[in-house]
Image 1 (tube, one colour):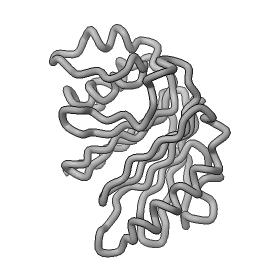
Image 2 (cartoon, rainbow, N blue to C red; image 1 turned 90 degrees about the vertical axis):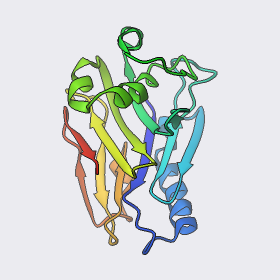
Image 3 (cartoon, rainbow, N blue to C red; image 1 turned 135 degrees about the horizontal axis):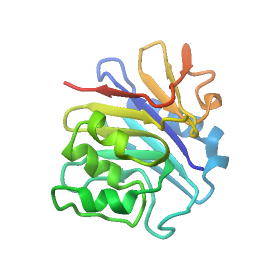
Image 4 (spheres, rainbow, N blue to C red; image 1 turned 90 degrees about the horizontal axis):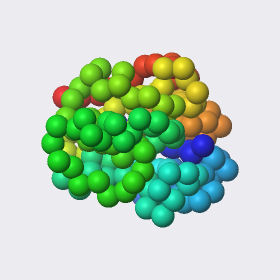
Length: 189
């Protein structure tokens, strides 16, 4: 079990980045128990992604958020991809894997195909946020059975929040709902 928290759809005109980053750090502390082995953060003017890691696969090098070294896409995952080795072999292009993590393959599947094409091939339990900083777009997905929890919320400025547990969003979001199992949301140009 790991914990993820993301704040997306940031608008430079109404966002105080240092304040929001500090808020995100306070929020993710509420789910620290989900990942006592590592805390990671990625932030830019469009998004903040945080990860609380419980080391299971690639204990030494699987820290998240993971970043695709070629295109800069960023990934924070709570989950386990059972068929990650087979999915690696099915990739059409060579990719610079930085870890032996079971989840890193999601970055490259996204780079090569549409979520509708690759998510049905992923065998595992997962909830994740994948952010494309060049296009300021993102993909949010949850496994078909809904084993891994995922909640979304919106604050007064309509920033979009994603978290592994609802309690991380309470007090910060005006509206909160559960992300439905087996669904994804793709925000694109």
